[in-house]
Image (tube, rainbow, N blue to C red):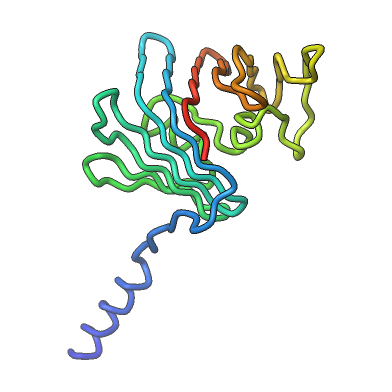
Length: 174
């Protein structure tokens, strides 16, 4: 009987999901506001994002600061934790955020797009202003419009994809 208990305990531990860890060193850290619209659904809130090559941590909250979701990417694994503590996993952030939040968040290319450049791993169509900054970019089915820059970095962006509209206003870079 003791062997059965140990075997069940061992199997339970093997099935437990390991918590993904946010990046310890970052390439950038930004804060801003996000607005999402898909069909009749809409959301506005705040976003905090720490990005490194091997991982990401995004915190999405209401305009009053109440947490909505925490998204952590470590390598190819993505985990979303809701304000209620429910955890969801998927191999990519777009399908995960669409399933849990109701809108797609293109984490795969977004790290490059928020810095005003196309992602190197997919073909892109770009429209540049005379000063060399991007005005518009089309990549991975997304269309990104750069509406305002603060210095060399984008400050206001509009992203669209198959009926989804995301607006990102970046207020702080670290």
